Image 1 (cartoon, rainbow, N blue to C red):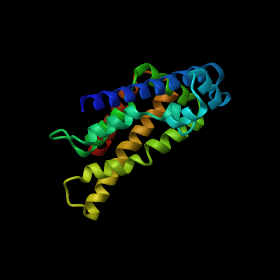
Image 2 (image 1 turned 60 degrees about the vertical axis):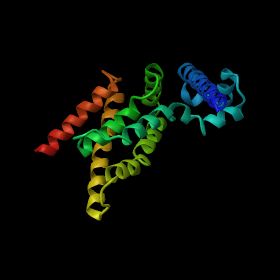
Image 3 (image 1 turned 45 degrees about the vertical axis):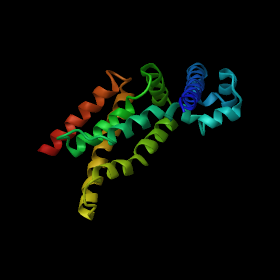
Image 4 (image 1 turned 180 degrees about the horizontal axis):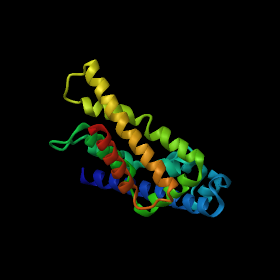
Length: 199
């Protein structure tokens, strides 16, 4: 049993190293040549893997920049444990911030710089983060409560208010040449949302 666990852990580490290598090679090529000028074949060659191996890790070229397994894991970790006394909006905000700031800081910063300069990446990022994620936030807010129509409406309003606020914060931060940290920009936007709701 211990040997099986060790072998599984070894495979996971090897897979993660390959994924990180592909990501780092892709980011370097994007920075050197421009995102649109780089092909999957070039990325695979630079990472010393076959194109079919690239596609085992990333469905498309844009997923090298936007695919963030650390972010997904961070979100799920937050949603699995709610802090005592935490409001609904604080709960959703903590999950979103965890996703936005997860992973290697340098790699994350490089990815956001690319997103800032490539409109198609910005559009895809917002579709990914503010599309499918809504349902998991609604489900988490309703967990352990009676799922009435009013309760579901309240959960959806809360989820959309927080995620839309963070979408604005991310856009503002990208357009401002990433002044300060992304977390600071998001927390400031959330504080403005709280002030507005309190009025």
